[in-house]
Image (tube, rainbow, N blue to C red; front, side):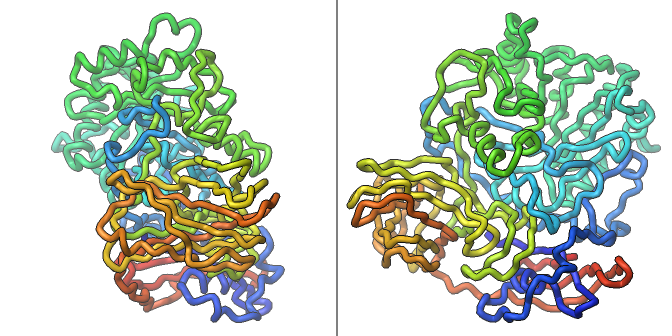
Length: 630
């Protein structure tokens, strides 16, 4: 999977040194051995600085949204995603990690991917802190949540979020937030949205299509909570959605359970005659139910069971109805009556909708706490998707209980550097080429599908983590701490769900290091049911090295799962093992990417002429598109 690489480039005019030239080198793909030793981060570059000229992700009020045009959008090239939406493997080809997982149940995550509506740089910043979500295998749609009456109520996903989601096969929706009056909502904003032209069409609907298609995301989440409307307004809202779907049936529209068919704001917490109209007659594709179905005063009404039956009786897929769960305040401490969601073994009444899934980040005290919360939230407290909590209490059970680990790793080639999309440094081929903090989710790699599945022989014990002090390419590597290894005993780590064909001449390798000589083997589960172990061509050393596995005799076979096996010839305790990259090639020679026509398109000077921000653009044959950075 090719990725466009973009960084914020800053020039320190007082010294004449390209302060982040090492990052520019990484961006243009120059070999690390050509990085000059005098490229150092200067004091000016270390300061907390973001150019006023840097492009930002888009947001609008309704009237400004209607005025938008691609021709007049000076930041468009930076806000467009060039990462196509990768097709995911069919769930029928995937194996459940536990017997409770249901192949039909889906998850939509409404997430504050950035901390505010306005002022979000298009592609990251020179800071480490960022919500680097990396459990994409458990969600089916991401809603880029945002919007406020004081900034803008129509919000597009930032380009780095679209890029990362697409590489994981996840469609992304922008947000149209029509707030309650007590939060600044105005009826006039809704009326502007619903205004027709002389031909009886909705210009706002056409604009929704144009913006989504131009920016490269998949549709919109509509949250209409403004009071003071009527049945005609509700009918117009449905007609607007129908026009969007007519103009481009591939765009997804998700409707929030707030406005009823009478135009009132009256949360139903279920699918019924009051709100179903918005997902009927070729209108919205899905509905996000309000959260109160799990409250004590409504629990005995079994609203999700009623929603399931209503959907089936009205030719609506119940798995396109999402039971809303508000996790903003308590994330992994959120109480939920899971028994109301469950429908016997291996099924749920509806799909699952998460409001503020990013709370694991905003509520965390530090980065390690964030990672622990994420693991408990998406997998479970034991960090093993094979483990299922069958208790009937309301504690957070972990979402791996209900949904499959999905994957977009298919075809005949695969590469990942296990990057989360941020770092304190930047590495290329194992060499540190920058010491500057950064985040850019466009640069995130594909993370393991299974978090975590370890099978240990003897008394072996291994624990996983992310290592930001040592990486092969990017900002971090995957680290396994061998707390104990018995002599001659293996520890197997199942990493990825795949649908990868081994072509003639294919090569499979990993880049790894360890502070102790260890043997590593590839463990491949093939589609024909065969599970094979292939010894690496060399042992691990304290330096990064490429370990190759001979897959020649499996040519023509399809890989269903990828794992690694670690073994030591002697007993040992607390030895680190870093995994920096994994690559399967299709046997074809990879041509170098050609870059040309690099130029400065804009500039800004600040801080008394000592710091400048520059916009750069160049052409690349990687995907026949122009690339830009700033």
